[in-house]
Image (cartoon, rainbow, N blue to C red):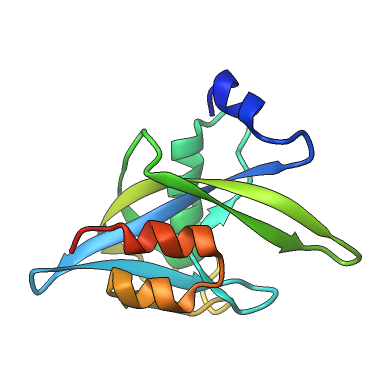
Length: 144
């Protein structure tokens, strides 16, 4: 994230990175959604920035660890969204910078296998099931 982008966020907003995994199946674009571990909400692979890694690289790693997805990640974000992250005794405001991931393989096993559901769906259907309005808007803006 650039210095300019950091200045736009309120000081109490935390930063995460996310991957928007896409593939083409039968001539149609699909996106991969996963469930969150704590609340089982549908979302995209996301997580905290990683020391020594670019944000786009961290997003790629999150997709591999959380859903077993391997592919080519874009180095420029395709959008962002804000959500409230549930903590034990409070909520944190988090802005997720989203990077596109063109998926070309799924690993037979991965770090968080069995901890999340993984589903490939059309972007319009994905937009209906995610709870974060900004993520829903990002999914709705995808061209079929």
